[in-house]
Amino acid sequence: MTDLNIPRLMDYRPEPGAFDQRVILVTGAADGIGRAVAEASAAAGATVVLLDKDIKGLEQVYDVIEQAGHPQPAIYPLNLEGATVKDYGDLAENIRESLGRLDGVVLNAGWAGTLMPMKNYDPELWFKVINSNLHGPFFLMQAVLPLLEESPIGSIVISTQNARKAFWGAFGMAKAAQDALIDILSNEHRNEPRFLHVNGVDTGPVRTRFRAGHYPGENAELLPAPDEVVGPYLYFLDPGDRTTTGENISLEEFALVPDGSA
Image 1 (spheres, rainbow, N blue to C red):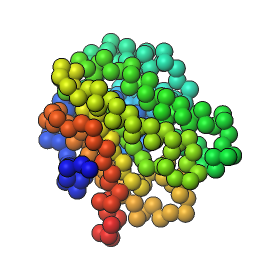
Image 2: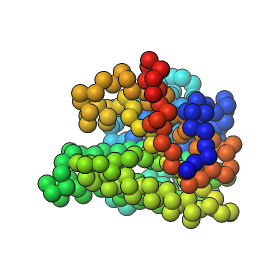
Image 3: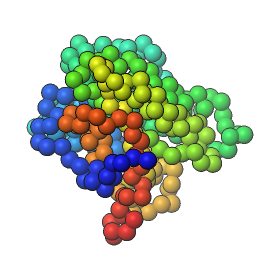
Image 4: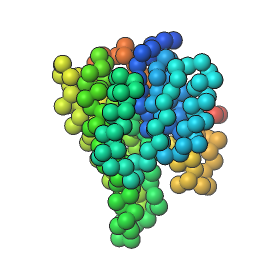
């Protein structure tokens, strides 16, 4: 059980300039929570590397950040479903060569495919979903770990989700494995000199295209918008926190719908 004050974390916003000189990579940055985290990190002074398969969406986020006068972001189109280990190595090398450092990673991109019973799960779909949600995030994280270890205060934040439910198949399995990844990686990097913050955020239902695609009959107006749940991500990325690691918090019971009820 976490001792963190979840409602306070949801309201958390860094001081102006708190992320100055920091470079933060955000996957799934073209939309939803990834976009909200990227824009908020840029507003706090970070140079954000925007990664997604949706190039048009990335360009829109880039324009918003640049027009706001924040540090110029970088666009890195990549589809985790089909990316190779070499692709992730190239990503890390490009960040080192062009930006010289990496201080934070938000592993947020996710794709669930089609919900179906385990007995009917298509093997090809299974591999694609596992690649997108487990293999891809792992090999990306592995490729950039040397850069994060060089940062004075390196942080990894994973968008987790309790999907251990009927019909969620490969996505549910991959998300359960991400929970384990937080435990394993945080323990491996808990001590100096290569301490890294490794934490997870399960936002619960949020008003995103991902959510709408799987719950088409739901009234999205009753769900929090992505920018209402970015606080914990920003807290875990903030260099002012030097100790918090191994946390995997859930916001679901604390998120408020517009009429003020839980």
